Each structure stands twice: as C-alpha cells, then as structure tokens.
Image 1: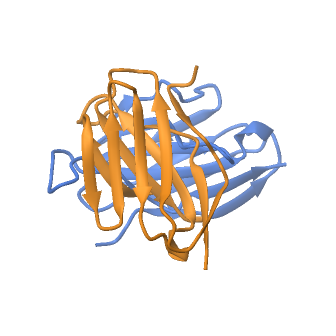
Image 2 (image 1 turned 135 degrees about the vertical axis):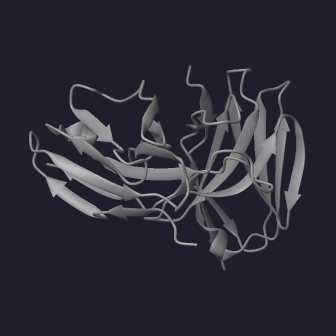
Image 3 (image 1 turned 120 degrees about the vertical axis):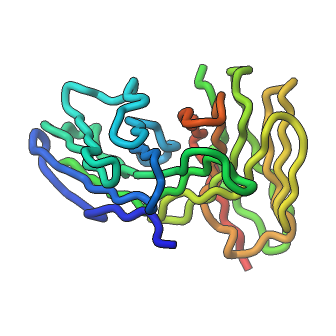
Length: 118
Length: 112
C-alpha cells in the first residue's frame, strides 16, 4: 500500500512570497489533515477535510493560509504572503472513515515539506 | 496551561536500558491516547494506541494510561539503537475525525 505522498520535500522562500504544498493521501482515505510542526514542537492541526468538505479549520490563519481538496482526493495548502514564523514542517496525514482492525481512525503521515522563510 | 505537556528531553540511555516516557494533560475529555515515533526528517508513525485507562503491551513497548491522574506513559524494554527517535504523545476527545492534540515530543538516543 503506497503511503501519503507530499511535495516538494524542501522549500526556501523569502518573506512575503507565496508557496504551495501538495499532498496525495492513501487511496480510499476520505479524511485528510494538514499539520504544522515548528522545530521542537509537536504537530498542530491546521485544517481537516472529510472528502472535499472542511471539518475543522479553527487553527488555520485564514488571512494568509488557504487549503483546498477539490475532488476529495489530493489537496494543496498555500501560504500567501509568508512570514518568518511560518518556517516549519508541513505534514499531511490521512485516515479512513470508520473503524478498521485494531487501530481505528489511525492517521497515516507523509514525510512532510520543510519550509524555510528567510 | 497547555493541554498536553511532555518533557522534550533529550534522553540518552545505553542499549538494553528500560526507557520511560511520560505526558500529562489537563482536559478530562480526552479518551483516546496514542504514542507516535518520529525519525529525523520523517513523518510520525503510530506506535501504540489506547482507549481510556489501562495498559497495553506490544512487544517491547507498553503504554499506560491513568485518567484519574491525567498521566500517560510509554515504556520501552531492552532499548535498541534503532529506537533512537522523537516520541510524541497524542490524544483526542472522540473517535471519529476529531483532531489529535500532540505533546512537544521527547528525543531519545540509545547508544550501543
């Protein structure tokens, strides 16, 4: 089973520039999450989709961050304009709807995109 | 007060040692407790999953949850150099589609 794919793996931009990240979840997973992990911190949820609808975006800085999952499969997260404090690893995760096996609703994480804003 | 507190370490132990990792939390609504392992430059992977209070064992790993004290632990027996990673505790209130709240993570180094 292929895992969660993310690209690019690394990105360096200057402040006030824009950047976009892409995520392709595990096939068949209806729920997709974007997390921000600042160095030395645990991941923090930015936005959660179920199919192509937003379930939770309460911690998404909507003045600069946007995300979409148009066809209920892959997703993009955009930052415009970027600030220095946006330097972090952006993790995408996906999970199936409904319990399965011994680990219901397990979230599978991709390798992340490491963003450096200079 | 943060919802989930975890000592970031770092923690260094010799191979074969028993490792104890801990988290405390403040929200009594949390019901599902997880431990994730994150290797450098990789995404977190689920290691242990526990519902409510009690113990769960999986090979060299044991997860404990004490809801009365709002305290969870992960024990690693016979630690190996391959266990060197950051261990993140995580918890959530509901089962279906609710957000995970993570601790900061504890960095563990096991020397051979």
